[in-house]
Image (tube, rainbow, N blue to C red; front, side, top):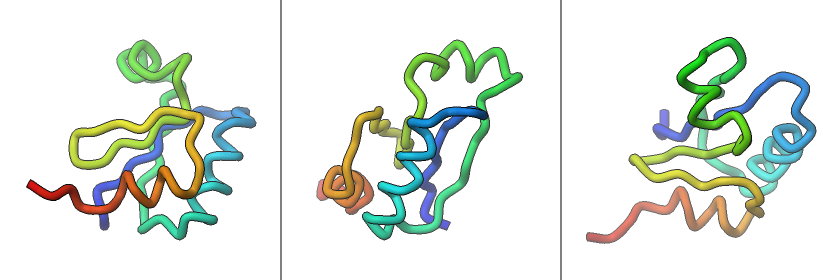
Length: 77
């Protein structure tokens, strides 16, 4: 697994769009984390979902395929 995480919630049209963008970007395999019902995650991401997390960095919505590809490309030291 790539370590890529998509934070999302139920009944979230923006989250559905984010999934389409990830497919368009041909993003590597990712984990989906549903924030609904988790007080800590709702406090952190509630108004910001969808949010991508990778290697300790976050990419908040809105993002496009190009931004996703750049986000998942390994960072040079």
